[in-house]
Image 1 (cartoon, one colour):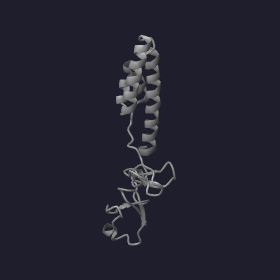
Image 2 (cartoon, helix red, strand yellow):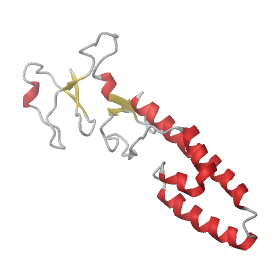
Image 3 (tube, helix red, strand yellow):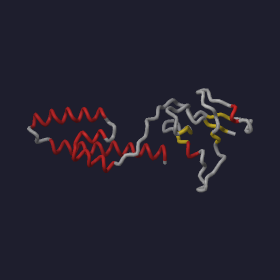
Image 4 (cartoon, one colour):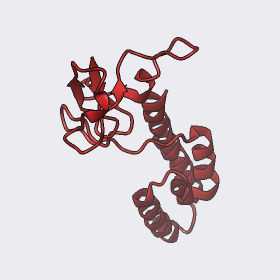
Length: 153
């Protein structure tokens, strides 16, 4: 039987199914997530719903894992955001829409660049810049949503 650590996602092959609770992962987490054992009403394996595939190496890891135990890729915390809302926030409140996306560096850069260009051009560039903010925030939100869906379904 294959068992996966719920904390780091490392896989172990356990021969003694009766005493699975006595085993512990190298990260210190007690083992107990069996792969391919229990199904819910929808027919989907409950344990498989706790797993995802690493985008770099394809290794199956726990959705709670911060890194892939196979290749070492670090996983960002995925957030479910609305690309449409991000676009309208960028369009109407400019760089402040980046705060919705938790993109603080883009917020500060957008604020500084927007103020600088606004002063130099006398405010003429403002509407074009805010359209660019909206498009950029839409793109970021779309990628964040894609990452969230691939990780949590």
